[in-house]
Image 1 (tube, rainbow, N blue to C red):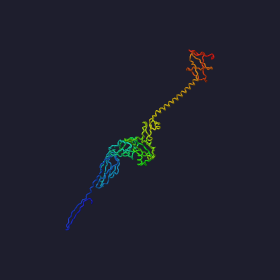
Image 2: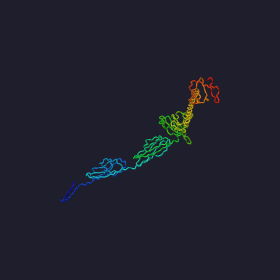
Image 3: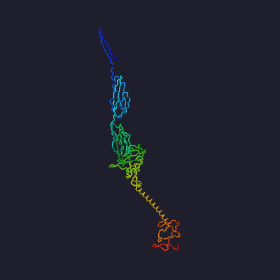
Image 4: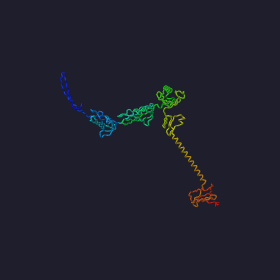
Length: 465
């Protein structure tokens, strides 16, 4: 039907041929078109940083159907990246902290349109720092060499996403089992005596981190001084439980085996202690070793089922007089500087290695001896040289009287063969050496009047005039 008025006549007739007529008017009015309704999802509140979010306008409606959707930021807003802006559901990314408003506009088939505003609030969350709890301090006593450090009690408001255990550089040796240094519980084995320090670092999804420290003190075995190490020529994989029990019975009934481990590819090391009592006590390892050294040569070769390669204390127990340390491999003392072993006591009298001899005295004695010998030889050489010089001077020296003496006090000396004295005008010495004589003849002094007394002068003899 088209828009307009329609008149309809209705005629009815019965069996008696009586009839009646009625007229009906139908008016067709133009269609009523309502505008569409734009509906966006409720306003959003997000926490920075935001990867992306969706703007949903699929709930918009129109009695004639939606023909077009369009979404855009409200003028004056920060530019962001938007995808599928002409679809019912759009995607927006790169939202900074702040308030963001987006306009959704829908158009119906008859050209009517409607708009709606969506607000997205991006705020910066006050993220609390995670709190790491590494487990505190632990004490372990050998031979137990396994420990677990539990960091699962670490907390964070957004949850812990990573654990990392970091060993302190001064910690002794030890092995982490199965990569447990990257999970909450760190499992350690093969620990030795000393103090271990581990730092637990935890982080949350925002990258904030916290660190806590756990320490593990491994104390020495209280039976350390009684542990004996027996090395047998057999692979550790070939030593059965029955053979182990028989080995223990052969040693003594009071043997407490601590561990059996591979010593090398073809040998096995058994570490044990021997108890005695009552009262119960552990024998000293050195005494047990000496006893086995005496006993084993007297027994058959297969006394302990396998050939014995070595019997020694499990740990080096020498104190080295406090002037060195004990080598755990050779079981001998390594002395500090200026200290040494008494080799005669150690090797000739079969005493334990020690560092009781102060070699500083020996060094000082050697140095003083060398200095004394050097000084003595130098003095001897100098004395010989000086004595030789005096001898040559005594043979080649001639003397003259000084010219500045008074005539009455002058003593005239006349040598033989008419040799005259050289002038001594330019010499102020009391006696002047005449070194130009080529011969070694002696100078003879004679006096005609005998000895000179009370200042009497010499006179030449008649034969010399």
